[in-house]
Amino acid sequence: MRHFLTLRDFTKEEILEIIDISLEIKKDLKAGVYKKQLENQTLAMIFEKSSTRTRVSFEVGMYQLGGHALFLSNRDIHLGRGEPVKDTSRVISGMCDMVMIRTFKHSMIEEFAKYSKVPVINGLTDSYHPVQLLADYMTMVEYGVNENAIVAYIGDGNNMTHSWMMLAAKLGFELRIATPKGYEVDGKILEEALKIAKESGAVIKVSNDPKEAVHGATIVTTDTWASMGQESEKEERVKAFQGYMVDDLMMCLAKKDAKFLHCLPAYRGQEVSAEVLESHCEIVFNEAENRLHAQKGLMVWLNNHK
Image 1 (cartoon, one colour):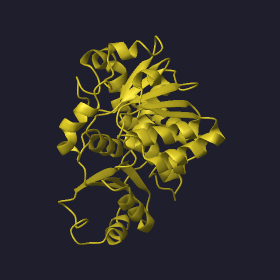
Image 2: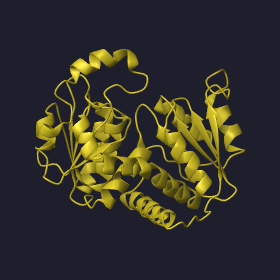
Image 3: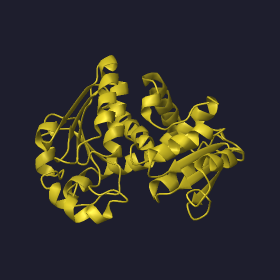
């Protein structure tokens, strides 16, 4: 049995296999073909952090695969209100076939997985957001910029940045990260990614210069400056991130046919200009749709490896 907590735990071949399954599932869906590969199975969805894309994509995805998704907020269950994580894990995994958790501390999902009898999927933690990266890479494959990609990530050194580092390290492409001073990536995660990169041939560069990072890039991506739980820091962060907005001038430094990605929600006029987002809306919203297909592919893969 396998859990999906971070891309660190998967080989290049396994990641690409999940992407291939996802692409096939999307192709079938567009042709009106629904294969009930998870018929009569139940996915427990535990949300300590709310979400639009994560809830809709997992719930719809499980339905389309012939199963059922059960929404559980922290107001609906005893988790975090007295019952130990390991007990909640034992109970839920004894009744459901798979569990997706969207939470704050990564240690919480690790503990849940330790005691779970069924596969556990990381729907987001403060440290990683691996399901989003499956959708992002799937989108890159569809637009033909997966091989020899040069990805520039501009913004906060957060869970998205950490997941990009793990994806690059595993698959072997070049990743350039530019963050403001004081908002750099986690040093331990960077060290781990660089160690993996030595084996794959990946190049991972970190700096505080967004223009340098974007120069010649084939993919430019970013994320909101203030993530959920950081609302009180928003004003301070807007000041610190001046010069890090991906606008037309910054995109001009990338390759002529460079693509822009954003995991959404997007705040126009902050991390990305309205002009850049609207001019790349086809790929950005296809990327959002790919959360559905990539997660279906992931769930099918995990079910096949129980």
